[in-house]
Length: 199
Image 1 (cartoon, rainbow, N blue to C red):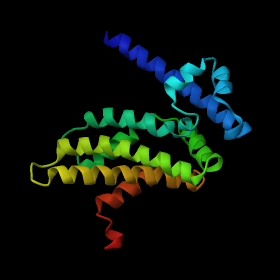
Image 2: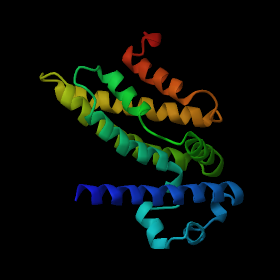
Image 3: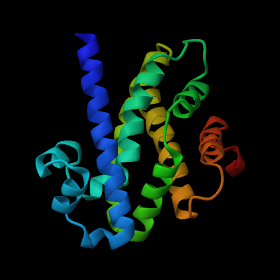
């Protein structure tokens, strides 16, 4: 049964990635507004229904790197040793993601060249909220038993989520130059040191 579930999950991820690659290539060639879901589905060899099973909107394709990484991060954090610091566990979880950096680069570039800043901001609020939920739950499992444990978990989860999203978006705004891993580490380290440069 577990083998069947894993096979189904792999097939689903493979289809989603194929749709994403086709969409990013079409958006780059023809422009976001000039490509329809019908065209994307046909190019990928699937039905529109299959497209919508993977992406609620055409725009969601541009943010799939976050959604995929969110699933991976939740699974990865669950496997981190309890003795590891919170920050090291989060960074290790992020680093363990087997992402295709070129695909992440294409999505980040497309976001900043094809859709408005307002649409990006609206979607990123949802992304950041989803990351905050996963990270809050992780912090909750590690937080000391105290009257402030719940508040600590929520603040830490929201702050770490913001650090991760801001790092990737800064990298995208800067033309996807520089080492993404170093930018993510620097962003998390600012949180780790309590934003000491501002003190």
